[in-house]
Image (cartoon, rainbow, N blue to C red; front, side, top):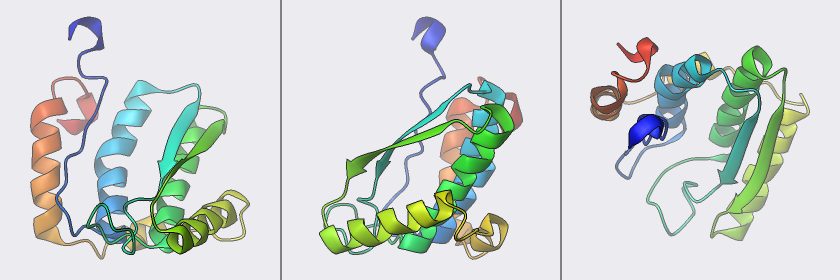
Length: 148
């Protein structure tokens, strides 16, 4: 409400989404919004409960997908925030998946790996993307010019 309206961007998605869908949605919707916002610092609460092995979410993310999301965040930070990126570990409920995913994020941050996010996003399910994109654009296009 008020002057803060439109600045909390929620992207409601149903269970069953995996690496390709998350990366595609991040690249197509969230990254453009972030660039319009032009952050001076990218601060991330990094949770891993969307991992396929996690019992809570019903999502299908893998360590490679978390590395891809990290690459997206690194690109936003590089373009807008002078590379300033802070990730704080939030959680996940499957310890082996949490360990593997955190390690994949660190490898991406350190430049040991370099995820090709465009290639990763091409595997996304068109139907899943269409539904999530529609919901987000419908709600947020009046606040963010790149969504129009």
